[in-house]
Length: 640
Image (cartoon, rainbow, N blue to C red):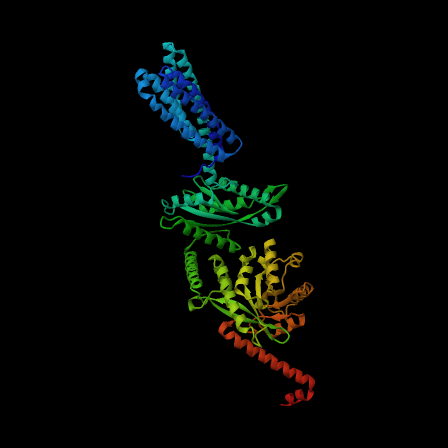
């Protein structure tokens, strides 16, 4: 049984009924002895006891009412239970009076039993009476009224008076019951409406829309279309002008959709700036209708003396009985994102090619989940070297999904898979586990003991301190100064106070924090200077062709100077040629990473590779030192 959606009203009804119950007990305390006083002395003693108990119950009911008025619900319920128990027991005591009184005056006894029974019921479950038995009380009021007429006709004034008071009490009880029922009915209707509709726009909410989709797809055979609309540019309005302006835009768009889409359309807001519609095709031209929708959505929304504009991207698919709602939503979503990716088309229907892509994506996600759960994800490492002499100073761990059938998955698609499947955090933990193993193996190695192992972690970690706890659990204290964590610039710049707390905690542990893909986001210098970051990794888009691109050279120089001012080091990513290396050395870059320094290799090979490279650079350095000390060595080598 579900809880009352409006408990305040129920509490008031129970509280008010407690007062009525007190009045009924007091009435019974006087009415019953008056009706049955002509019994013998023993019976009168019982009547006196009955009266005293009824008066006590009246006091308890009155105290319960006072407790309810003072919002002391625990005391109210306790007093109500005591009262209901006492009422039931006192009603049972009438059994002693039954045989004699019933034979002497059946009508009096029937009236007495009815009076006390109703009083007992009222005491035991007054709120139930109010909400569900008002019609029953009305019926009893009518019966009582007929008794009143009968007593008046017979001239029995006392009984007629008691019956009149009883009818008045029942009528009052019925009236407040009907009022409570009416208010509850209205509020329950509002609650049902709210449970199925979006509070902001009045459209169907996601749950109600999915229900409508399920109902219509079971009968549709290509005659209905599922349409998804996503607003472009809404986030900028929400962020720039505030949520009130954003809400005004959403309400305006909802109204335009209701006016533009044909009759019989189920329209909903799925959340954020995403709307959905179930459109009956009928005699309409779908493409013309959707173009009209996009035109309406693109019109200005006037808010606070300014015109705000959004655009829309639409994806749609035909409803089919054999395709369930989640798959239909995925189809329309895929078509909608195809529209977003297009520079010329804003409305796209789902087609067979998209179906093939979607099936591949779903299969890929399933296989990816299995690979992660079964620890079939491999890690490779790419060296990071000092730009001046190419001495290895670190490695970056890169996740790989081995197997020929996954060879075409790009690093970007791999990252997207991890995010979409919700496995990014688990992948990061696997990477940190591998980092711990390498740090422990190399701890006392003369060549590798200073190598920093870098892990590119998901931005999901930026919202809490769980990452710091994981590193404490996984990485020994003495190895943390050789661990590096990389965060993508675009996510790091959108961070908040929790992000700052996490970064400060990591830095206090000795972990090196890097901003990855720097230059691709919109970093605020004022914000950047507050971040506890040790290193900036310049995106490869600034490095490619650096030796011939003066604009990129100027930008890289500015980044190097900025990092130096902020006390940070710099690494250039994607270095592939000696010309790019020379240009970076000239600009003062600290370290480089890319195919020039070495392609990613399996972790079981990286140790020997780094030792060989360190040995080679040490040998070159020794030769240079010898040449600097003895020019004859250089001359002899040149002659040779």
